[in-house]
Image (cartoon, rainbow, N blue to C red; front, side, top):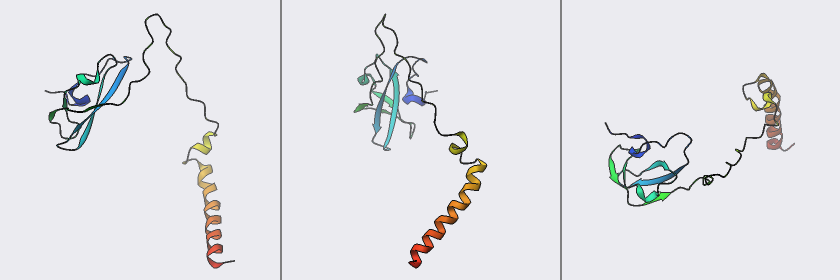
Length: 123
């Protein structure tokens, strides 16, 4: 059985630096993205299994979608991983299903309707 995910290529090992390339299948118009090891050249991707129709095809124009930051050289420390900043928005404000949103939305909607009617009537 042929592997159809990742364009038929084996997935890089977890934690291994990768590059992503894209191949266009002109027959069905689908772009297939392939994750390959960082050290492998994009030109190595030649025959790909289409994500759209599942047929293998020769990939003439490989588009290198960019190389993530190069891994540090041997002996160099790895760069620190950027952590997302904690949100300054309170939890009740960021959750649209919270009771505060439910009860606050009624007067806001009413004020918007009254304001729109006042503008329409020219008051």
